[in-house]
Length: 212
Length: 212
DNA sequence: ATTCATCCTTGACAAGTGTCAAGCTTCTGG
DNA sequence: CCAGAAGCTTGACACTTGTCAAGGATGAAT
Image (cartoon, rainbow over all chains, first blue to last red; front, side):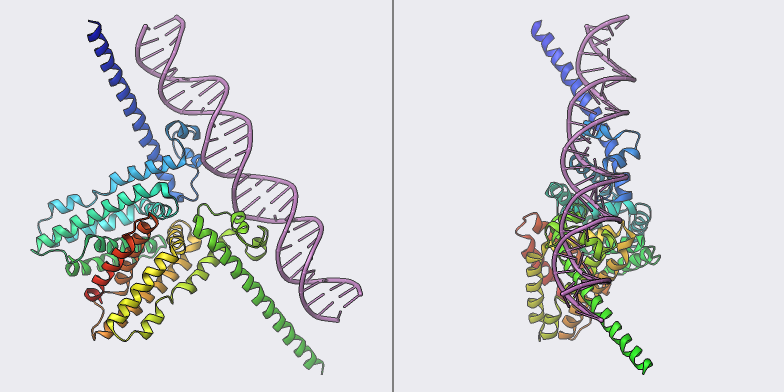
């Protein structure tokens, strides 16, 4: 009896703790999402905890209840950002039935994200640069970079498959190429260069058959 | 007579002013160089004027004698940085008499600069990211990016010429590819990945014949 | 209804920031 | 040699920063 009661109590305790953890984590993500807004607006260098709090429903003290310090918060942001972006093209990859369809779907998503999520993209490049100075970011950043490389590779593989060929480059080179082009287009787009997006699309359209 | 004297006096005045300007500019560059040291060490976000001054032979007040504000200083740094790096491979390009010679010379310089000047390179990526947030940097950054693209194009053109062919990609795509590969290798190198540099060299050696 | 842990706010702290004015030193032209 | 300009230092300013402790609100369990 006593043993059973204890066991039940323990199970309850474990369950409630798990629930608390879940709630705790949910709030962490909520705060991280709010932080991402401000980070995307101002960049890492100019973003303070107070500014983040002001653009959220909370006050600046909360962040020290949910995060050990500023680095912890930003690491959480980076990790959360990752989950949202590495699946961007997956639907196109799985549904496309021809090279043309895949190309058009890919280019459409590319143009859309460059247009609509420019602030998140520039934040990514900002944080990746920070990782070159701040060791605490490196692990997460390198992991995301690998995920993005895999994402590009899925597109290239499928493109090759639809033409009955094999990609002509390594995953690393392919990713470097797309990332470089995207980064350059993003900078030009943010500098109000209206040719940035169309020229990126042209370049990618021309490149796809030669490298995949 | 009066006219001549006035004319001579004016010439002298003009000359001395030019001299002063030159001295003034020399000091600006000296200060910018000191600033680059600290910026390369700490990154844009963590670098303060006092920190820069402490790592130099001057005190923090000087910077407001020579620069209107912090942005002005950093813009000067960026511009100065440019001049030093866009000619990095030019000697190799002009002296190489064969594809092998050019390849080996290029790869050697690539490895050397990644090893020895990693801090300057990460600063460049940092500042290029800053330009996505801070409009004041954009003009200079875009200009440097163009110069770097031209630098890569000189290598590719010469490589093609030495084999009697034409480069198979656009200058923009080629630069994006090399920049992406370099950036990724730099991050890995800074994360103490010893395979970063050799793998970059392998990748570039493999790529050169297929794209140039 | 009371108690107690959880969640969040508030206000304060020390340290650090860019900026600038006042004044010291050094150099230069007369 | 000396006056005045140029170059540089010093110290102060207003403000922002991350951090944290004290305490109020909230909600669940007894």
